[in-house]
Image (cartoon, rainbow, N blue to C red; front, side):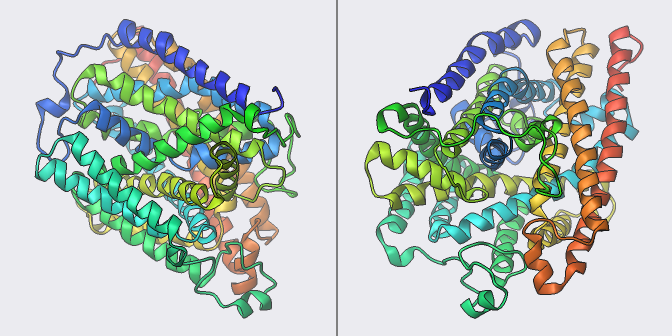
Length: 591
């Protein structure tokens, strides 16, 4: 029994449940003292565009799909292959218990108590304009990196699981219909959810039952002789190909629409509807993992592997500290969540008491996604690279339990992975647009129709040439550093209102130190490969097609990003720690 995933996944789920039941509720009542009668920004500033109250059940789905993306899927897969399943599992469980939900919930409460404002204005209020601008510039580069990473992983799944894109189109259609029914026709949320779920299931069964719909296939725009000429495996995704360019253009159109249209028309309902198949897929794989002792699937991965991975052998590697803690970029803790939890979701919270189930509950559910990822990779002896490993492992677990043909689960988990990445990355581009508007108020760069184009071009280039290979770890470093900064900002706010701060300040310091070390390491690796004029991983394909110069340019850009982010992160950490000290001593006041 102990050689199956079941007991370990069950331990993680029970740990999350007990954390929510005792620790989270204690923080909610004793530190924040939430009150259902205190008006929230959604009710105080109702405008039907940004501020509008939403049922906590719908908002939980929105929050979960907004924060749960590819991080809790790809991160644990990579960490298990590098360091073994034991350290990966421990970080997923303990990180979420003591740091992950703490950040999501606390950032949400901080925003609620500041009129639904985002971290930029709150930073200005607590630390002044210089700190605000540094944070906003950091976020600009962070969002470029995270968008490039997600674009590549989405494209890889669309390539390897034909028919996924067709099914995802039905999810998007379900979102548009749900939004029209709820926000325009004022239909009951439950009835609208059933209608949307029907549309999603129609797309799923269409793809699963009609083989002709399972298209386009792998590298469909690149002829076979092209792959033979370059000695490429046509079943894999390669940077620089026509197919990758096509998918980048498709994604860019979807991202742009999500960035410029009003929230109730497209983005909010689509995020919520995307949650429906995602939660079904998640529950199925967790049940299958728990019952693995009955289905006979055993652990195929090593419990503990190397404590150090030579970057010249594998550029995604490095020392277990800090690399493990940024490889698993979500599921344990994620800085992206602080952006969603401050300035987005708080504008729709109907009651203060909804913050814990929406903020804390959604984060622990994302922890369950990370647990499912660990389980999926555990049962594979020779997993494929990237998110395709999750599809394969989850399919194996669930088909063994349900005794159904592979195609049903393969399509379901192809949808799951794609939707997890696609819908959240739509939010990346929208948030980028909002930050650019705040930074460049009187400039074309701040225009809502212009700024999304900027991120789509830069991120698209990085994805096209294959820089995602190390950008994943880079994304983890920048993402987790943002989490540390958010925790420290919450600590300053709590100090300013004379509340206890240890529960956020201690994890904030740990994350800041760990992630600054990770950023320094990744900057070194990018600089090393750029100086050697050597492609990183799959960049070799783009180098073969266009020459080494294109990947060297990409690596120098990435190294420059690293230097800039490291400097900005160190400065912000200094501002936050000294600001917390001043507020604790009573030497500072909010602006």
